Image 1 (spheres, rainbow, N blue to C red):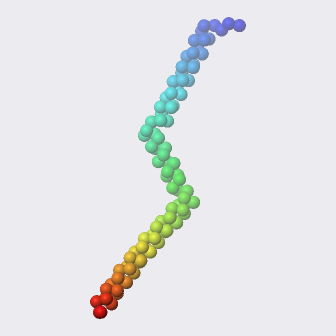
Image 2 (cartoon, rainbow, N blue to C red):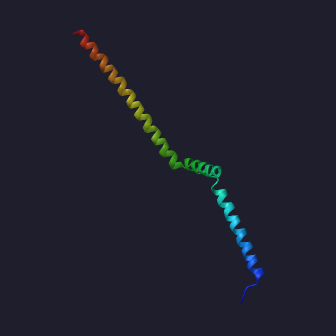
Length: 91
């Protein structure tokens, strides 16, 4: 059965409307400010995860410990050098 020209025109118009809607949605999704907002929301959600907070806390404690060890070793080495200089100056 052959389709009526009006049916074909309605189908074309419906398809154009759907395509325009799809293009508008794609433009909205790829808008840089929307992408940045979505990334920000995802990062906030990720950082609010309890497991992530524990891991980041552990990393912070580890870094603090390394800085403390470095500081302690530097002071220890400086004191050892002063003692060595003092001993050599006595000779």
